[in-house]
Image (cartoon, rainbow, N blue to C red; front, side, top):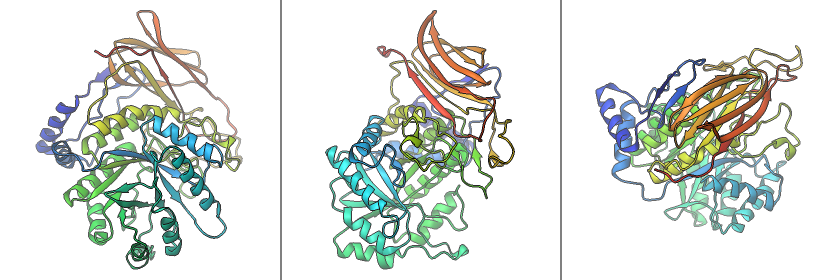
Length: 491
């Protein structure tokens, strides 16, 4: 087996600068990458970061932003995770707060007309935030095109104490909403209708939209970011990058490119982090599935963020049940969302738990000490080669990345230990060094169990859902899990 230790933060700073000067190397994942004998060593490189990451990192460590670094989660108002009540929304906010998340970006796809539940749910969300002393903030991620609706929605909550503000200006974001000449799309008239109307009501705005590049791409570059600034520089205070449909290395590269462009222009930037992506309902796109490799993909993206130090981060998403990007720690979303069709949305609490460490690291700039053992894992619950009865489900034709039947496990160890993973009755044992390491293990149908021992004593254990040998529907929503050992005094 092979494994590679990562560099601590001060050394990482130096390394990025030196290697970038040498010809475009990129920052490593901020912890070791370890595989077992059955796996293939991954190429955890971040193409496209290059010298940009070095410049961003050096400027970030020389001086922090005027406002504290904050982390938000993209919240789909169309889904009520635990039901439609103040208590249910408050529960979600408290779960997010426990992980270090500061607020929700409310994705609102309608305001007037048939989908009036949006207004009702937004009101309940704001009531829930008020019940937490307005310490959990909210802002709109506008996903509608009617300027009148936009003005009404924003005005309604502009002066609510739970609305997120930056330097006394109301923060607004979007998912799209700009004009795209190559496709003949006009977009919202922000400068002619929305902002003048808001200004007349005494509402000052800090605008960080996710605007589509033209030509449209989900994996924009430094040049795309600069073209957006050139075109909309008079409207925006910065940019947001909504990155989910792409391999983690490409998402990280786009984040770094946007961060570089924004910093060079003295503008704000809100980066994104996504745990997974499967376009369940995207029949025309082949139900595209991107292999994120469990916690490894998250670690790679957070590594880029630790290097570029954007002003804010938005996790995409908290609760999008249709594209698999959710991190909300709900066991079964269909229990509260009756409209969700099969397959089952497996728990993604492991993604949220894994992100805690990196959220803390990003906010403080200091790598957290390891004070207890921890295990995080992710895997699909059926082999990729099996299929339902013909005609019962649409195939998953587009599988992007190195898609294999693997369990992706990350161990955070206080001291060297032994990891034993038993999949379908087949056991694999590996010696685990102290620190953070990634492991890949072939899975087999049957029960799945995880055991970390030290000198013959159990440090932690976890039993995951079984891997099925027959399925009625494809399910490319992975299950996740986590377990912690007893706290110890850090060395």
